[in-house]
Length: 115
Length: 115
Image (cartoon, rainbow over all chains, first blue to last red; front, top):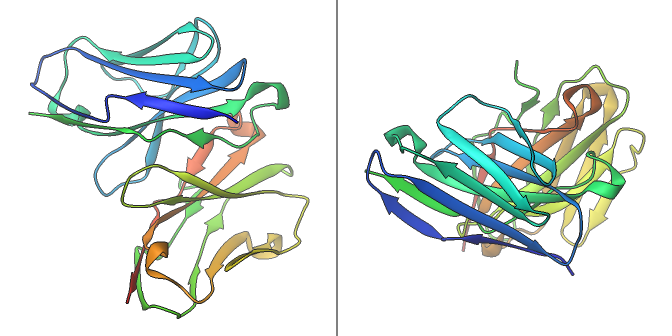
């Protein structure tokens, strides 16, 4: 069966510090991968998605970036965090071989607090 | 424009009561997909159901049931005989080809089940 991992689970960072959140998927190959952010009390906002190694699509202009160095690894980064980057970050995967319309399955999330 | 509307922000019920969550969507596509996810206090989004636009058959899974009506662009979700463990935020989402099958989430409905 497929599993998706995210770490760290919780992170407290000062404004201006760098960020690296990692997401890995097990039990599947060639997944579509997604990063979402959920601000407190709000819905989910798609940040990035990837259909393959090195292929990243950005949805919202911001100071965040994403990379996919391996097939089942998706990394969310920032060079300098802003207060507004605080939130709950969720990674998701979907089976690419059946198209983008397939179900997305989410990881446990990372809670980021920028102070 | 909001593609998915969940008009109910919060619903509070007593255990064993039924609760219905409304979801109204907007799309011009003839082929699209609708989803419901559950987000318990732990934060992880749990997939509940996926329905394509050509399948209007209602579905029942245990205490959960879904009513899909294309005529009113609604995909409502009912929890029968609610339990405390049903307390969570529930999200409805839409995936459409004209939007590259990205998930458009509603704002979510917080369900609180009191013992």
